[in-house]
Amino acid sequence: MMQTPGVLIVGAGPAGLSCALWLKKLGLAPIILDRAALAGGLMNRNTLPNDWVLGQVGETGPSLAARFVRHVASLQVPISLGIDGLSMVRGDLGFQAQWQERGESRRLACAAVVLATGTRVRGAESLSGVPGLEEISPHVRYGPTAFDDIPEAARGLTLIVGGGDNAAENAHMLLAAGGEVVVVARSEFRAQTAMMARIVANPRARCVSKGRILALRPLPTGDFAATLFSEACPSLVVKAQRLHVLTGYEPNSDFSTGFDVDTWRALRRDEQAYLCTDAAGRCGVPGVYAAGDVCNPVFPSVVSAMAHGAMVAKAIERDLRLASSQS
Image (tube, rainbow, N blue to C red; front, side, top):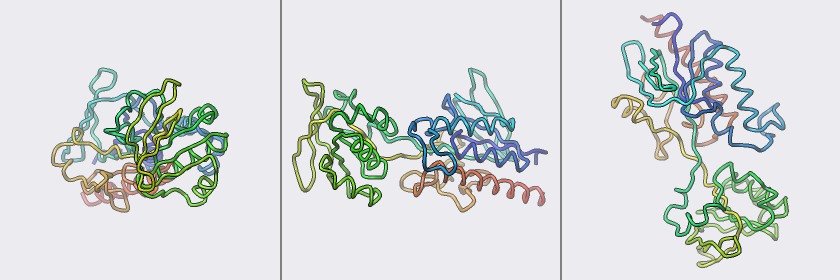
């Protein structure tokens, strides 16, 4: 065992940063890698003032991310961004990692690997096969960008695709700003009951369950027309100025090119491709752990990711200490 065991953390979002903080405090040597040019993960795309993270009222996602990064950097934890070509090969004492950083090859021997790559927004694939999507692309907003320029969007009607909390919150904000909305869910709405009740009661809102978009086409007025289908109304045409696609997230869990074949095949994944772990974040491969949204389809959030990152760090320290005492 190395004198100060190194731990490679893949992902610089809240789970990876929290895990690094705790690993450092527990006497290990974490290093964080991320393909993105900016640390913080999806927090950097959430520009709304926060009122969900305890003690951080009014902070936006980017400001929270910057605060988290400063804390970790103050502990001299290396954070390498914009990396490419990451590979991790199992060795006798852990893993040998290699990657490209600013055109140079880097190597690292590490005792453990933490996969904290989070999730990505479901984008145009949510409307795959819908005619006219490309033609109206200037009107389309995906994921967090649907919350930008709410006052501008509220000047007309916004078609929202999604049935969860994000879609409902988007509709609520647009209605509060004086706009109109049509909200289409592929199945039944699963958003918070109280918020859905307020939307349904608003005369400027229409909610379409078990629906989908059949076709889109630009209009000479600069807006677009959407033809919708649902069991209640097989052919409903809506004229809108914005299309907000809020159909959720999917995990960044494809490490098929990062790990050797045997390790990749041994990683457990569920039917949605989220990584499956035990209570300590172990992925079924010795030395490989997962933290945060990449393995949390039930409650993906900043607060749960931070907590999980800390839990995984504690498990790694315990596992390495036990392994060292037995060697």
